[in-house]
Structures are given as structure tokens and as C-alpha cells.
Length: 409
Image 1 (cartoon, rainbow, N blue to C red):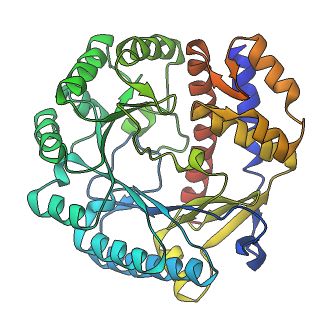
Image 2 (cartoon, rainbow, N blue to C red; image 1 turned 135 degrees about the vertical axis):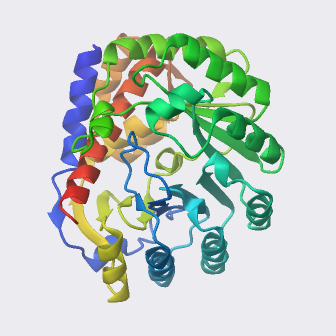
């Protein structure tokens, strides 16, 4: 069953790679008869240190390039505002969004001037959280602050090449922001080379002792085209251990925390950063961002210099696109909703008809989902299967990223 689901998701994911070059103005035209696009993702691709396991679009920090990039990003934001978008939820990821706090705060002020923003979720590194930065983020009215801890074990951090902080610094700086934001989240990783179950359990124990609202567990996801030996090390993932790690994760978390997604565990109703499950459509802004609007998958230029050049020429940053069929769109919604732990099956059929009845029958028969009042919810068994499905989908997008980065797009 697992292999069939993995093959299915990989097959569906590859459809997003059947990209056509170019961009049409009609892609971003707002259809007043449809639901508005609430969600916007802003990508900040700069890091002061590049972690070898990371497959996201990121480049080394260069002050002049960073300043030009933030100015270009404001121009792209203006393009969407002029097109009539009224985003309410903003998610900033990277890279390291707090790589230049002054430019970041200026960007957030500008973004609020363009849209009726209600919630902002921001990623950062634990080491970035000094007093001035924390005060600035509070004044910017950040609701959700997510810290990329990955592990509290110094040996594990070194093996990951995660050199921006140590475990003690992470714990101290998490304590500094506790209670200052609506949601404080930390990211932890599992199933990376040399990690033992004892290391993982200790990370979970430390998280619980910190008494914060949320944790997101990411499985190590392979990515092609890694150049150095250390980078290539993280392209070889051992899938045989993943189920054991995940079952331990559920054993440790489900007593007190509830699953906001199959990876994210929250105490109470908390903001999550998975914008792809909150809304049907979302816009991706910044170098290497992807968006999904009215069934069209949009890919921005990846290389920051090319992104800046296109924006400064009064052009949209989109370089590739692909239009989903009705069935592919339905399957994409199925995956993202199950990842978010609830799929309104009644509403889905009103939008797409009965195109996914065979898939739903298979999921029910296999015990992966159960239906409650017209909503399909992953079972405990099913949570692992959905986790693997989403990991494979993201791995496919990682392939897209690496291909675009290596070709200089």
C-alpha cells in the first residue's frame, strides 16, 4: 500500500514539472465570482551560513544584493496590490528572513500598507533573537514566530552542518520569546544520518520542558544535484527508519498536543505556517517562490539577480507555469487537506464532482481515513501514510528547485 501511494504522489507531483516557459497577465486576474486569494508567501533566500541539508532556494548573504532584493520584493508586492489582491495572511520563509532585520521590518510596514493583513508568520534562526530584534518583531505585530532549531544536541547540529547556534543558545532564546507572540513554534528534524532514537527522544523531552505552544517535525527530504560530499550525504535518506521515528513521535506528542498537520503539533488552536492547506489558492512572491492560483501553478525566477532584473524591468517574476486539469487540481486539494488533518469531502464534491470516489474508497478500505459528518480525517495509521505522501510531494518540488538553481533560472 505504501509503495503504491508513494508512486501515486510521485506521478502526480511530476505533473507540476511539466512546465511551460513564460507568463500571461490572465494568470493573476481576479475572478470576482470565486473565493478571494487570502494567502501570500514571501521568500527571503539569504543566509549567513548555508546548511548542507537544506534544499530550499538560498544563497550567501551579500549586503548590496540583499538591499536590492528587498526593494524588488516591494515592487512585486505592489504588482499584486495593483492587480486587486487583498491578502490577509502572510508567511515569510527562507533562507533566513531575519538576515537583515531593518530591511525586514521596513518590508513588513510596506506590506501592511498594501493589504489588510491579519496574521503574519515568520521564520528565524534561534541565534538571531537578540533584544532589539525581538522588540522589532513585536512592534511589527508578528503573530507566529517559528525557530529553526532542528536539534538541541550539539553533536547532531554539527553533523547537520547547522552551525548558526548550539543547543544551549536555542533553549535560552526560546525562553526569551516565550509568551511574547500568539504562537511560538520550533522546527525539529528526524531521520537524518547518525541520529539515534535516544537523540530524538531527548529533543522531544527538551521541547516539552520549554512549555511553548507548538512544534513541527520535518523528515529529512532528499534533494538531487548536491555538490559537496557533505551535501550529498543528505541526499541519501534511509527510509527504513522513518516509520519508527514517526510512531515514537506520535506516542510522545498525542497525549498533550493535537495534530494541526501530520507534522505539526499544537497546544490549543494555534497558527500554523502551512499556507498550502489553509486556502485553495496562494501567491508566491520572491526568488524561487511558487504559487497556485485558480488551478495554475506559477514558478518565479530562482536566481536573485534574475529575479531583481525582471522586477526592475516592470515585468512579473514568473518564469514557468503549468495549468492543472480538474482531476489533478482535485488530487492536489486531497493531499493538502489530508496533510492538514481534515478534508471536507462534501464541499470537495460540490467543487469537483465525483472524480475522486475511487481514491476515497481505497483510503477508507485501507484504514487511512475515517469519515465524520462529511469530513475525512486521517487515522493514526493514516497519519504516517499522509506524511510519506507529503514528503514525496515536497521531494518532487525539491527536484524542481535544484534543476532551476543549477541552470541559473
